[in-house]
Image 1 (cartoon, rainbow, N blue to C red):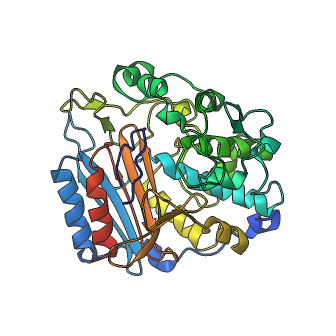
Image 2: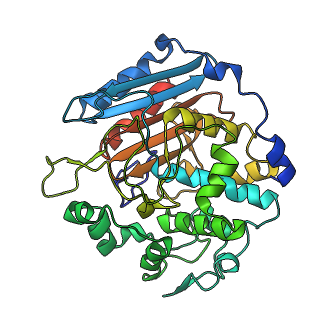
Image 3: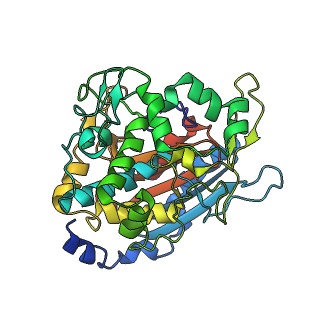
Length: 387
């Protein structure tokens, strides 16, 4: 199962400095920009259309392989006007933000600015403490592979009721939050397990990883992501929103069922203050930009060999046998025997996923403009990679 069960909208079962001057200069693969014959992805199109028929408002997708680029969109971007979803839509990528953060941290490790086995307290002194939480005992690596044991702040019932569901979300979606506020929520709980004992996905890890990045760089997290990844790769559709609530155009609307007692009620949740997912889910992008990013990453154009090896060193996910988690990317073997690397992403109103072979010569990225329909995701992936 690809998507993890998490309390946010992803409620689903499923470089050294010299290197930085040269790593981005290699030519893009020629096949990557050739138009792709649609006939090569008929099964994927059928699976996408089936997901829309099952109730997902709209889906935008892009696949890349040896034959070139195939883009598609199905369903609607706006349930009120019926405007169609478009192939170039911007959307909130949620947890895929973590791959951007991990990549920058690994670049900084290659530059000697930090170590993966540094204790968190070395970079954020005195922050992670109380209720059995200890920043001296948790490493940067454990933040990135989610073995820290820190409680997930999104699982705090009061936080969820205030910012994620029902009238709480509708009343507070424009609030500005600091990362420290969200970490404080997590630290009000005892850790579920000791550091290193197992993998368990906690959004608190991702917030802290972005805070470590910012402290080690001496610059805002957003500026480093832009300088090191977005600008060199010319990701024109990719941005950090800061405290802005609106999506850049072109974009569709995002939808959610915020009220469990009213399962037929659907709310437009497109607008929300970006600070509420700073560092662990705030990035806005497109399917094309995400495919370019993951291709550059997996082909070694963003990281030296040692750091890419570290990124692909995984720990087993005990909740989903056959799945394992590296540093900002995940690995899964499908039922047909194909092994993929991937990352999923969820935000209130959005589900997205990027999946790719290890050499990134075959990729699929897609976005749902709703945070339901997770049961249709694996059929889409299987249709593309297990035809």
